[in-house]
Length: 338
Ligand code: NAD
Ligand code: UDP
Image 1 (cartoon, helix red, strand yellow):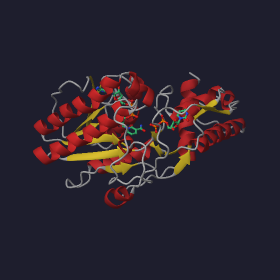
Image 2 (cartoon, protein in one colour; image 1 turned 90 degrees about the horizontal axis):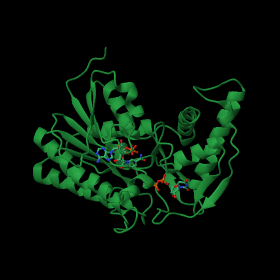
Image 3 (cartoon, protein in one colour; image 1 turned 30 degrees about the horizontal axis):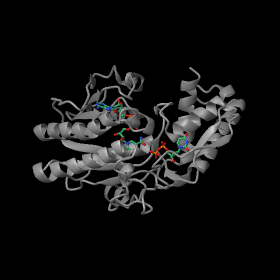
């Protein structure tokens, strides 16, 4: 049995993609973990393997409503993150970031907990400065389809810093750049999940626009490590701090890497090196790359400047895109063949 500390962590959005990995990591670090989720995009299957742990508790709750619990640390991750999910009910998205943050900050104030906000690279909007340092204020459309998410997260950052200044709350703000890995929702419309599912099903790979727009993709394990390091950093370090992988790829390059990854696993499986749960037949992708219209306000380029994270948190990503994609393809293949 693990040696559990008396530290209690609350993870809002704990049944989601990042939240479920964070709950798992905190439990293995000896925390008691309370996962709060309204299951808007989260899934019970993401946390099913944690349910028998006596130090893990799940509460169905919408953070837009007040919450009265006793905890030492709060990781505020609740918020749909993929464009199709956050645009489905944009008013609720803004409410989750704004009302939800007010409620979680109020909770932190009452119980004197340290609180971390999962902010986003979207606060930089379609950036005019490249790569993006934390000092850049961004270029955000306040009235577009992405605004409910971008402006909600920007307002949440404002609330965090005002609670810090006004009530001396111990805050941490992480600006998370595109993160991928197992437990992403296969139909969430994000580029990594879309491309992998399309390649596994032999469907065409839909590159939006000319595919020259760039993103930097961080594997989930690296990101979770960054969040934990940030929470454990000295109290006078609030961030905001960029967490992401600075290796930058065009979306077209990503499409090619996904196809390569699927092919590679297919070759390995025909050589009898069948990784966990892989079904070889689905790994001979018949997909070709096609082009579709670019969604409005789609940022042209994105790449984090992670100097602060390197210097202050002693953190940098360690997992290369090719390596992370293989792990993610294995997960999606098992999911898809069920
Ligand atoms: P996700 O959609 O998988 O997880 C979000 C979780 O929050 C889900 O479990 C959902 O049910 C829950 N939730 C949503 N609204 C809620 C509410 N009002 N009350 C309680 N629970 C609620 O997304 P994710 O990728 O795991 O993202 C987690 C956090 O990280 C989000 O805040 C997101 O903005 C941020 N982030 C993620 C990325 C990324 O690339 N994954 C990038 C930048 C920022
Ligand atoms: N994208 C794409 N094809 C898809 C899904 C997304 O070309 O099937 C593009 C999208 O237009 C954007 C990039 O991939 O330029 C990343 O999109 P995602 O929704 O994953 O995240 P974003 O960084 O835009 O929030």
